[in-house]
Length: 242
Image (cartoon, rainbow, N blue to C red; front, side, top):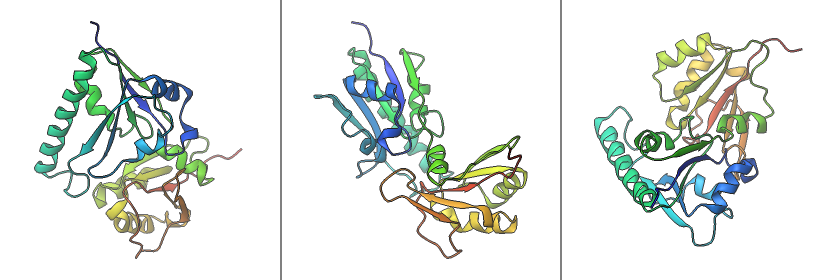
């Protein structure tokens, strides 16, 4: 029996209509579909693909043991995530060894801060693997916000808000345009840096872009505490506009 094929499939930023035709085709024919989620939750990616799955599909829910409860720099976090990915890989490999193709769905694009990447590194050398690009979350957000992000020779900088304050400031000082992701509890720190650099006035806040409950606002005030982890800030460039 030949082994199954592994697919890492980007399903876009949230709106199912922003999924590619290829992603939809693979989902409709896949015998096994795996998706990531927070423990106890269904997960955004599973919500996106509702209605695209074949009858009788085997679903593999890959639930993180932790997400933001422990700092990413904590050795306990690293150990827990390594163990989680090892176990998840073993579950998916069992299907591949049985000859079943496996589609692993990823919000946005699989290779852009994608949860699929540790699976890819563990399995792609042993199984035939294909990765299907998806519309990134930041692209979905800046289009929904009506915020052109780069002009002319502008250089786009993408930053995780989890960076330390000085690292954020250093990168933003050099940026023509910026996207700041993974806000959550880091919002106040990021806002303070944007204020210091004179970037606050042109910054746009987007929460749940392209999804139900979407919020698009100017940069909220300093005491704003409602930013979820998957909210982002857009700082559009000011380069050459023809």
